[in-house]
Image (cartoon, rainbow, N blue to C red):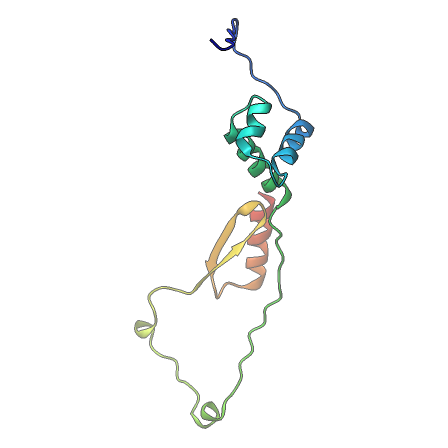
Length: 132
């Protein structure tokens, strides 16, 4: 018969420091290491190693947000130069859905506005969303 261990008392949770977790992850990252063997040596479940790996990877790779300036430039082709200027169409012929844009703000918030919004109003909206 093999060795048997009987644990009595209140169940305890181990509190691993980040240095201990990183040490175990480093051991698991060795080329010949098997996750199950590393977990068994440290008396943890293999899933715990995967969870720690995801946690530290997410902390290291925060999304980077950058903005680019955008300019709309109308270019004339030879066909457009020969055509007469367009006449305003009646409102009934226009699309029922206005064109909308989405703007990603700080904290993962998204601001959805109509494309023809005044720039000063848009600026105030963005500031109020980011300050909230």
